[in-house]
Amino acid sequence: MIRDPEKPIRTRPLPDEYPGVHSMDEDEVEAAVRVVRSKSLYRYYGVNPQHEVSAFEAEFARFIGARHAVAVTSGTSALHTALCALQVGPGDEVIIPAYMWVSVVAAVVNLGAIPVLAEIDETFGLDPADVERKINPRTAGIIAVHMNGCAVNIPRLAAIARRHSVFLLEDCAQCVGATVAGRRVGTFGDVAIFSFQLNKNMTVGEAGAVVTNDEHLYRRVVAIQDSGYSRSDTDELQMDDATSYGWGRGVRMDELRAAVLRVQLRKVETTIERMRHSKSRILESLYPRQQIAFRRRIDPAGDTSCFLLTIFPHRDTAREINRLMRLHGITTKSPDTSNILLANYGMHVYYNIPSLVQKIGTGKHGFPWTLAENQNSVYSYERGACPASDDLFERTQLLVIPSCLTTQDEEDIIESFHQAMDAVLGPVTSMTSRLDQREYLTSPCG
Ligand SMILES: Cc1ncc(COP(=O)(O)O)c(C=O)c1O
Image (tube, rainbow, N blue to C red; front, side, top):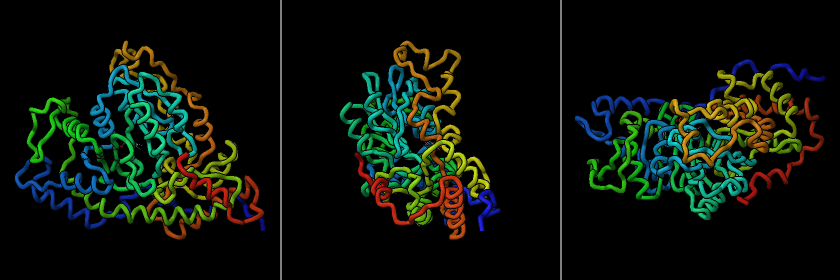
């Protein structure tokens, strides 16, 4: 019997993303209550200080394998703090990927520098060859964004940054816990940022961190997230260290959030394991399909697996397969956050950010686009600025892998993929495992 390719496979929406949320229980409640009972919710002093933020910073730094972590209020404030600590400003260009999140652009623009778009490759991160092409004497640094839970080609990008003496900032907001050859992302560049917003691998709703091995940068980060002055080991303001003077952004983390994050940090490996289990089941079933490819993972073992990116051969086939899978009921309660084509993934895609495309200034004088220091940095941000990325955005489907998928959820996803592909691309004739696909997925950092 021929099955109607549009007939639903399931009627209940799949669970929403929120990886860290699904593991929340009384442990987080107890941590929050403990802090409220102490009546000491400020990190630097109080009636009965708990030092939750300092403890979280030490534990998170140890988890990442870095010397220092500084907890802040969000991933966005972490980006601003890190770039400020690197002294980015007018006259500087910062290379960013065509696929990121709007906060990356905002941090560059708010400091008076000019973002320069570079193409992504099939890692869905910066294409190293295009980064090299975009470097010029005005380039201050590179922001590598590890999108969708998996590392980009960070060893190669780090080598490029070193060779050209520009900074490398790793944006690990979507990638807490990922590794490359056993080394955590966030330790390859000069500085890294993390987000603990609701959609992230560990969460307290809203928070972030800056991580670095560099002592001087660390002191500047401490100063900037606070009032402009660094702190001693006993949290005294240090007014006599002119090398770390800055202008404070007031983005300190509070004790309440740090206490909850300490619990989430203990659970993050389990959260990641759950997503890995679901994703590898789905991937295994799709490997035999010759007609499709997957996001290139420079180290599959280090993928935190919160997303599956599937690349179809043509724009039209991608649209049709996605349409059928959505009709099958492979959607979430928030319909625009899962099982969509990347082109429709909002302000993760450069040309979907109106204020970037239109070069909107931060004040009425058009800062930073109109600054004399930036007069030689004139770039277009309209669709077409990164044609190779544009093509990938049209052909790639993003599916969220929540940390609480049931076996039935996984089977529904697998069935939907196969039915949609049978209808659009034709059935597979041989189900032999596709060796070249596996090699492609595990290809080294070249
Ligand atoms: C890649 C990336 N960078 C930065 C951020 C900003 O983090 P936050 O939402 O905590 O400000 C996000 C948030 O989604 C992100 O995905």
